[in-house]
Length: 503
Ligand code: AMP
Ligand code: MG
Image 1: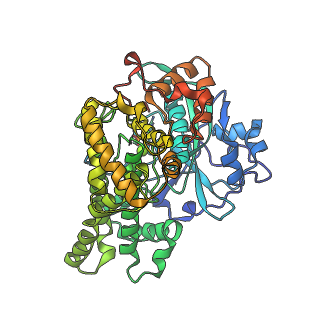
Image 2: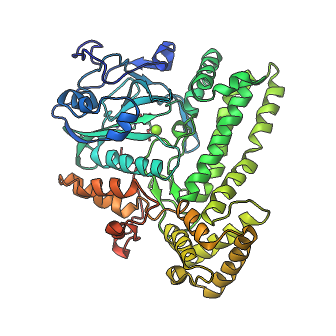
Image 3: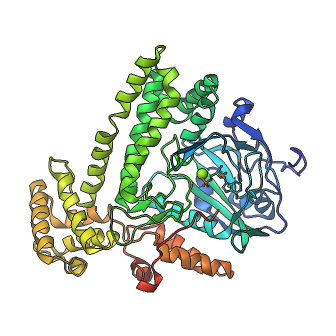
């Protein structure tokens, strides 16, 4: 482990750190610094994001900034730590995980006083590395950069990418690969697995401290509740119910929804073998390690609830002094998940269908379309965008754009009649429906085959597709004719069937 004060520190504070996690007691983390790399080079700094966090962009893009992003220099007021956590991985409990290849440098605040972690991923071994090398290779770093930025532009809560650098060092996986480090920001890195870490050790004093920290940082209105820890759990549940609905609305499959990858703040976190669906099928799975389909597209709400049940069990001693009463309280809260998720799901899909109100039967209407899409292997993104575009044609749209995507034209027509009747109940002019639908149905998503092509090019030093994807995906709801090709699903020989964790 490197010496805490071994490296130069900057004299001013171009990154205005203001840390809270590092003032928690030591069992929450290990104080450890990133391991320096030999020849770092900048790939990208997310200048707009940096500015919004009151970070000096000139500094970040300077040689000194590069040293920070590579882990070679500890900036002023940074208090680097590797966070401790546990987690259920594919249903099996692992009592000790933690940041095995990541370092929390500290926290900054944006102009509205919202607090964000700055975190290096791929920054070398820590006490939690187990057998890992603590490093990341270029592919997953670029994937997380592009996909997390796309998710943010799609309006889905997510960690974000502040910067990416190459290390000049090789990483050994199945082959020798170029090393890279992602700097990401998050509302916080407290996970369901952080609660499990302490609960599994019977350290309920730390569970208490952690719950107080989570309330203070992510859910301050819980302080006013008569039952703050129950309210905390209910609010986490509400955010997860919404988050998974939002994922489903853009065809996103997280791929590795282990409890250590579920953030208490309600953000999408830890982009590994994640993928956006091209052709719609509810049982779609991409991840190589998910052989049983545990984290399949349509299973995500079920798994979110399962993960929340793990969280609930860690909070039991905080909910009531009598264990049986506490378990009853937790169970009652947990049992609201389906209803809350269904409400969020209906809200998301109603918006996609141009419906402002929510009425009985709406979920069934959306499901009926999805059923036809699954039977036809229709492209998820193109169908919804095509419905939106169709409404531009005024009173009698023929939806020519999507017809060829459906096998059963009669069934599609029957569905269109029902949908248009439901739209008519709201009385919005088709032009308005067109406009609102275009803000709920992206033209562009980070399609897997493009991500793979981007990584392949970047391995050969060509970052042009990485840049193109960032540009087009920063405005995913706008028709961008110059980037028309990025709307298209893969050709048969471009289809990505399997994604890898690729750590
Ligand atoms: P993930 O699959 O990225 O959520 O990681 C699961 C656990 O494995 C976390 O504790 C990571 O820090 C750890 N891990 C993943 N990759 C590496 C690596 N290359 N070196 C050390 N630890 C790792
Ligand atoms: Mg993880």
